[in-house]
Length: 391
Image 1 (tube, helix red, strand yellow):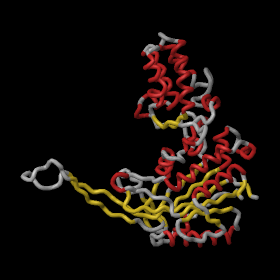
Image 2 (cartoon, rainbow, N blue to C red):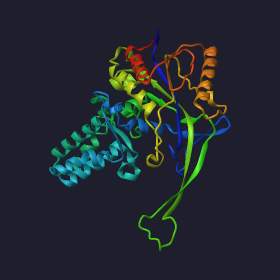
Image 3 (cartoon, rainbow, N blue to C red):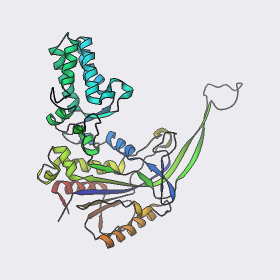
Image 4 (cartoon, rainbow, N blue to C red):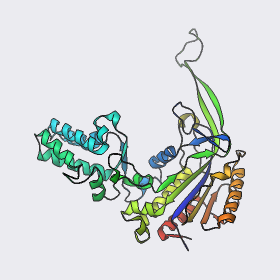
């Protein structure tokens, strides 16, 4: 048996007449690849939709999974506002603590909302801050100067408990919530509070050149009378694209178990992996079924994966993107055939060391990949995590 250190997830999704992910000018995101311009979906877009999806396989439906909040206003709205509404603390003291906490959590730019970067904090971390703020306000009910110094001390090793978020990380389980355990967290004000991403997500791209058009539309005024000026109340246009997208996700299991259980990555095989198995099962369903869509009301861009291939193994992962470097017709059968050809070439060059399972809407023959339905595929991946073996 081979240790299941990595899970590699390859997908093909097809979307017609959609605008899945826009750039700063409102157009579909693009990338050059193989001498052709392809339509692209950013990894940030994909992760965002998986993170906030609300269905049976939402990540927050995983038992004992701590949630998180991404915001630049956590201190004001989640830490100080409950104390303010309780009406038991002096306003000057609350303001002093709020200012010190904003700098402690968000860094030197935390003094203004516009200067703060949205930070992902686990609910356990938010509660930790709220308790510290409440204790400071109770100890210095009328002395805003002393309260400010005490609040600053929370974030300085030389005077208090630890640099910025380090104390929270050491005193809570899943400190950054399940989202941070999966997708990582960077805290510029305190590198010790950073969390390495266990799920690595590539930008999805079309296996063929971009397919787009400008959609002209008009809006009719329902109250316009026959004797008034004819014409639309509003005229506009938007870009619509269609595409068959290749997606690629890697789950680093040692990092995932380390983030979930608080152990060292080298100890992952001896740690409890039950939550990790459940998280992976949910993630497989989300990747296959959740749409990274914008303009839902006008394009209904809902689609399930036409194909999902999962590989379990111990050697360094590698994308199969090069299967699509040469332009293809926008057909799932052609993309699956190109994937098969490239995998066969890789196996011949490097040998087969991964165990593979496949879910496909259409008949296809991926090398050494047993075909399963999505439920069974997700269960197989979860079992690889639980057992630690690529079976």
